[in-house]
Image (cartoon, rainbow over all chains, first blue to last red):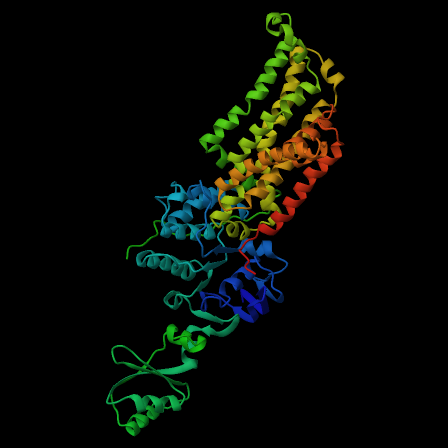
Length: 303
Length: 291
């Protein structure tokens, strides 16, 4: 396991940001998911050594998060959520500067800065002053500085925030390439479900500082509940009440589609029996694949 | 969708090393960024006028016969001794000029990092808080020493060259040490003072104004208090300039400008440095911590 934390807790004053988080993350892209304030960024910051946990322990690439912070920071790259740069610099100088601060020799850092800037698509703009960069360019620049020293693990905090759809797609493509072809483990913290769903094989869902669910995306989808999509004819009020009494969650979409979240052990025939009891016709029935959005809603309790 | 990559990513086959001075890239970059500013370059060049004037004085003092007409009544001014160096190094305009240079070179050292959220980038590297602060302080040290120790030690050498003998050094063997001591005092004081103010705001313009205001206001305040409290010399301890000049006179072994022990001024300057260190230690973090 490249990252292991056990019973990690942290509080900002009276606010408990993390409460006994225990998690083991292996290879591949891992998504950290949760609503705002769930503790995603706090967990990343503890792993990077920005914050000292009040309780618990952890190891990254076998380095202790309390004792071996320098070694950890040498081995990981960090792309923060907020815009960050050094005024008065161009992209090459900026990227090489942070390569050098990571421990690279100056000339190597400069050479490598050119390479990663080309890789993230800033090759043509690498001598432009950073003050003149657009939001999308700054996002790529943050990725370049995180990659310059060739980290083994890349922490990405909301990498697609503030991007237009095209920019977002391009940054996601880069991250996918990094995680699948470059043998760099990516830990992606985001509240954009589509990003996580399209990039990550494993997901950790945080809720109020605790782990609400974790595991491989496919496994999580399968174990939580079954999702059925139905189209009905007739008055559906009674049917809905009947299903809710059976422990199902029912959502009616704008186009008339009814989504029924049923317990994993439930029998789909129960739905037909309920329809017959309440006098509605089932005109369409499909067992659907649950999306991450569904999973997230189910686990975190947010519609 | 068009690919955004013009070239592929390859792994770096080098080895990340542990630097002896992890702060060195910060210092080098800070100095380079300062020299990119035109206004800074102008004031930095202007700050060398005083050493050049002092050099002229040294030359004339060794060629009095050639400059008889010029020095007629000012001969006393051209007696070269530690007081001559003290006069050039600690006068009001020298200190103000140094402050001006540092405003353009160093006001944004931390303020810009706060404004552009770059502290988290620094601290995601194998860099400790003290490395970061040492790197920033070394930028200030570079400019202070470049405008104090460097030119005035060279002036001592020029004095010996013009005289063609070592009599001057034999008479005042401790003068180079005084110059170094005074330069180091200025370095330490300005490093803490400027960084304290630079860390107090995200706007380097505001910090620039703050540096001037505190420097000048402390002088004005001390003058007002001095007038109110029956010309009590202890009131000048409120003035940054007066404390620096008092300490300078002590280091050069000259008559103190204030009728109080120099230890008081050293204590005030040390107090400001300790306060700054405490504030900087709290202010500089990898992330904003909201409590």
